[in-house]
Image 1 (cartoon, one colour):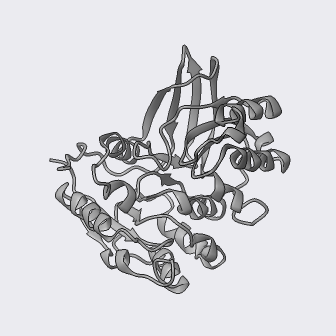
Image 2 (cartoon, helix red, strand yellow):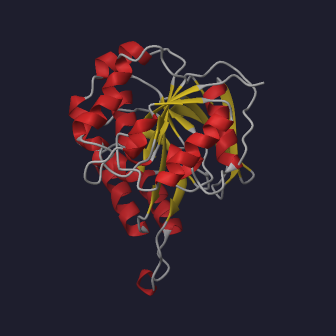
Image 3 (cartoon, helix red, strand yellow):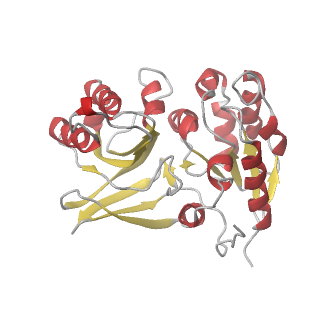
Length: 316
């Protein structure tokens, strides 16, 4: 029998337009034995947002006073909205409350802005992974994502392996960070961008054409951020349609261009991002990355973990 978890929902971004998905996600988590709190935020709405700025800010800042602490703080969905709140977040209070505690703040997409701001100002390691609606509330739950979610949250040391076309790469170590590329770019030049040296930068995005992706990476290169990294790991980049005008220009071209410009290894093929199949990555943890014989390996450690338990079963 696995240990039941308390999962506290927050909605700091867009309105959950798919209410049945939110209900299904909650139902699945409850059926797996977990308590889901703060459910009312799933239906909250102001314009395109999951409530007013004040309401969504309260979701975040209230975590600094929440007692008892939940095991997992789970984002309802992404969209847009976190960036509006960054200058009003109680970073010191969140650091005092959450630092060194077995609490996992998890989400991706728009949440990347908050995750990197917390890393920059509070030193907090959070998890880039599934969200309530798009993942746990999907028509069919992805077993891959479910298993990787619990592995990351309960394993103090775990290793991801995946097929990659990248040439052999001896083991290199660094701080694992990143997330959604467009959100990373929105922080460039702001106080919310973490200053990561010797980093392993992992990126993903959706609905971004390869030329827009290359433009964002060029900006990271030209402002000196990539020069401080040790490697780039590429997750899922989907949701665009190539045209005849592209004439063969695609993501393979982008990754090769970045290799040539930066001298960094760019390791492709990781299931990470907006697709249903996604690993969960602790942003700010320590990573050890290598590639051999067409297989990449990333060993991750140094992140907060929940007390050990058996992997929960789920009734899909």
